[in-house]
Image 1 (cartoon, rainbow, N blue to C red):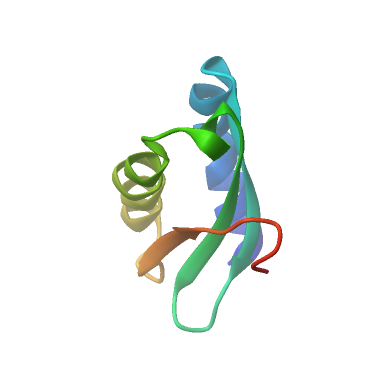
Image 2: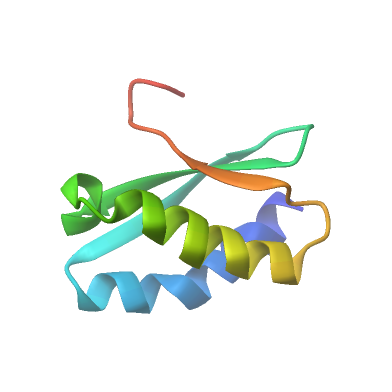
Length: 78
């Protein structure tokens, strides 16, 4: 499942990179939470939470029934 999620994130990355940001896969937990790290302009963007929930989470939930939510973490949280 982790590899499938990583592959799906590759489809999202160009949209974030176009705005100077990026996303990195961190983990997929037993309870269906995908943990990602936003980078570049996305890391400090005031719309980061919207990007995670309305963009990344919505996309991954469409692709995988196992995904319950997506959370952005920083390098010190994982």
